[in-house]
Image (cartoon, rainbow, N blue to C red; front, side, top):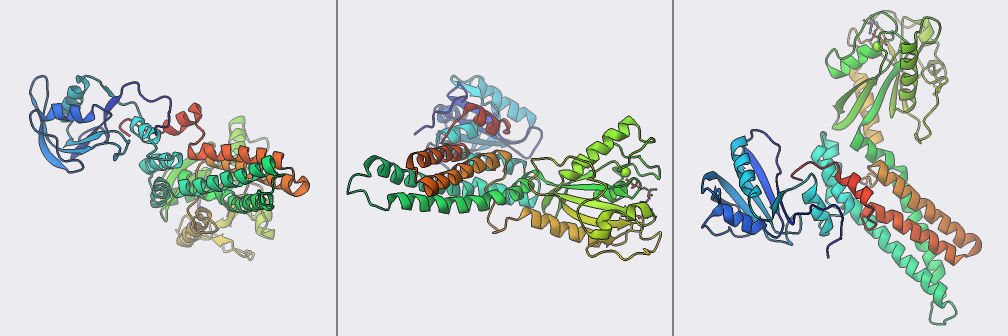
Length: 477
Ligand SMILES: Nc1nc2c(ncn2[C@@H]2O[C@H](COP(=O)(O)OP(=O)(O)O)[C@@H](O)[C@H]2O)c(=O)[nH]1
Ligand SMILES: [Mg+2]
């Protein structure tokens, strides 16, 4: 039942430190493969192997020198009921460098054992059908999760929510294709039900609707995984860097009253209500003779960052009438100096969510009435910044939730690409069905969609795709 995956380590039994390297309370060494139980037996000396899946304290010794290595907790998981599907042993050692080095050395000297390359255990789990590809990705995400939302999303993927949904679509599609092919082959035959064709079209139509919903939600999952990009933009000296420092609770960006102080993009990773956010401070937008080449490039990058943001905080200055004249304030519309003349990235399907904020309200009472939704704050006197944080938190939450509240299936760019391609093929299949009742063309499109779904579930195995997926893992996983 192996999945015949290339790139597995040549050695049949592998071992590695699975916990983080360095001094720790406990360190876990994992061994997987046909020699795993025998290897553990050698470290245990004359003592019998513990009962499977039962943690047992045992003295481990170097089989060659008989040196005592550690008193450890030993767990055995005979295959196929193990993480990799093979025989697996876990040694829970005292987490000192000397203990770990001693045990790894002793294992390295045993016949048929080799150190596991990065991701090898997970690769074996995939090869033995223990994990689907989206579950493998969920595992990688779980290991790198830094916020609550990332943990929740990754766990649901690891538990197979996305895999189940995709496999369900795959089954539906296979069924519809079988109906259609039977209709193509035997349509003359009386035994073939009249409605095989319409029934296949109906199934495809249903799938198209569901897939559209998931593709539309695609940014939410990617944002939880990669972080919501919040870009601070506006004219020079409006207080962008001051606001960034407020959110970081430290002086990350240089603040001066000299226009053009910030030139490059400055990004800071933070957490807001359990969601990962990336704040981006940018150069103030200005043009003209006083702007040198370095600052011009900074302005270009600022415009690009603003165009590609998930949320754009358009900051303005209560003491600077020029910044208050910005059309965003007057009309509540999207166009603004920060974006003027910049090319909006074609990849960005949804325009940035805009938050309009007027800073320095301590210095000058606003003579004009602010349009609805514009917040007036003071970075200097910390006025209304809690309110801004609340609005920002609400926005981030909305941007990270799918419309239905279901767990997003699409959490990576790879997912979005394949799901979109599958959807387009099925939409095309529907066109063939409706316009010309062309079953052959329709079946062709459905087969293409099937292969795109297969890239997501791991049913279609391209080595380079698997390399990308597994490259995220470290040694011992
Ligand atoms: N009065 C007042 N000055 C501020 C406020 N926020 C920032 N400033 C000042 O405005 C100047 C420009 O601030 P900075 O954060 O560097 O603006 P940036 O160019 O948009 O990044 C500095 O001298 C700040 O001290 C505020 O809320 N009130
Ligand atoms: Mg600045």
